[in-house]
Image 1 (cartoon, rainbow, N blue to C red):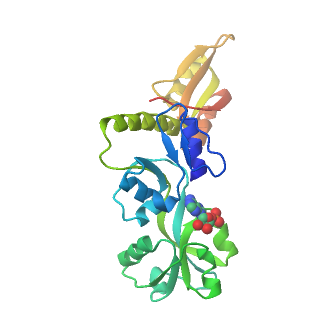
Image 2 (tube, helix red, strand yellow; image 1 turned 180 degrees about the vertical axis):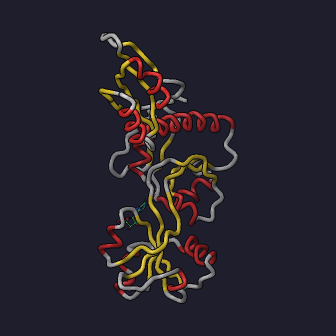
Image 3 (tube, protein in one colour; image 1 turned 90 degrees about the vertical axis):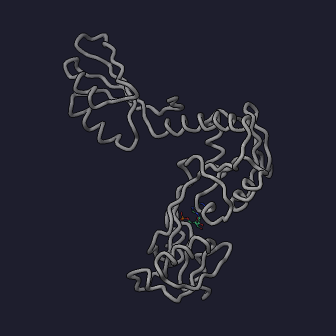
Length: 272
Ligand code: AMP
């Protein structure tokens, strides 16, 4: 979370140094003071007004009783909170764990998950190394964060239910004054430009002039594609922006429509 947050702020043009062990830093070119805090504490600090805004995982936020509001999803730190059982356990549905001991660091989220399924379990709250709990006889199942799944696998566990999906979000305390609200607006403007840029690619291609109209229809771009004649008569260069989610489908259609020499570039900022 810390790495992702630091990278995001740097891409927003906000420079700061955070050397080893340094827990507080002043941004060089933006009115921002940055605190590096334990993720569990962030909703409390924001709710108490120690910090005006925070970057935290949705899982931590859902576990906290603090009333802070989410103002932007940030698209990094993606993971899921999952229920896992020992590999040999014959799991068919969530009722199979009724009455069992489930170890987790997220008792509040897990309790509400089982309540929504009307299943009663014995929740054991532990603060870390949750995956080891079944093998040392502390629990029958676990509920923990999963990213690649390799920690579960190497501890002889199998993921059976997704309890929640999570990613990093920006939260804010209520009642920011006009000056702070305007600083936050400037920051959100930059963050949204960085996010939009990371979800899009700049594409350049060459096409025979008679195919240009068909290719332009495949490339909606921000307004409409740029077209410039090439030095070779009968050819144009077409430039546009395409979304990353349907990138390969668009490239296939472009090739079928006669596009050649396709170049794809990353975008640093995209000001909407
Ligand atoms: P993995 O082996 O990639 O599934 O990662 C699982 C381990 O990393 C568990 O111990 C998790 O608690 C921790 N973990 C994975 N993703 C996150 C995340 N986004 N935030 C905090 N801890 C995580």
